[in-house]
Image (cartoon, rainbow, N blue to C red; front, side, top):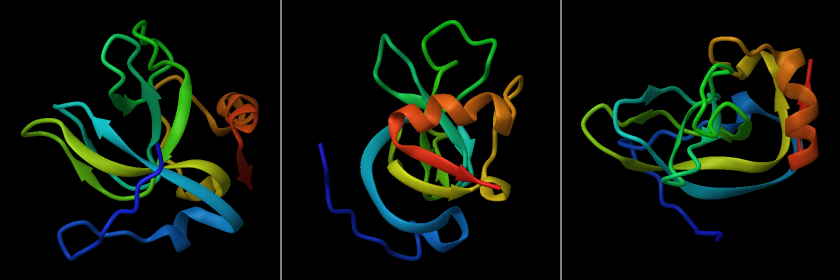
Length: 120
C-alpha cells in the first residue's frame, strides 16, 4: 500500500538527513503505543499485529528482524500512530538508530534484501 502523506509542523519530515541519494519508496505504517522514536529508527514488524516498533535483536515477536526505516519523528507514547517509513532506498549509516543488540553491520544484509542499502 502506497499513500501520499501530507506534512505540517506537527509531522516533521527531513529525509535529506537519512537518505543518501537516488530513488526511494515509502509507506505509512502504524507505530505501536509506548514508542517514542526519532526519524532514522530501524523498525521491526510485530507479526501478531502488523504494527512496528524499534527492532531489538532479542525480541521474539517478529520485530527482531529489521524491516523499514522511520522517516519522521513518531511519538506513540499516548497510543498507536501512523508514520511514514522508508521501504526501499539508500540511507546514511550515521543517521540510523538501531535497537539493542543490533549494529549497522548486523542489519546491513537483511535490509539490503528488502531494498534498503546503507552507505557508510
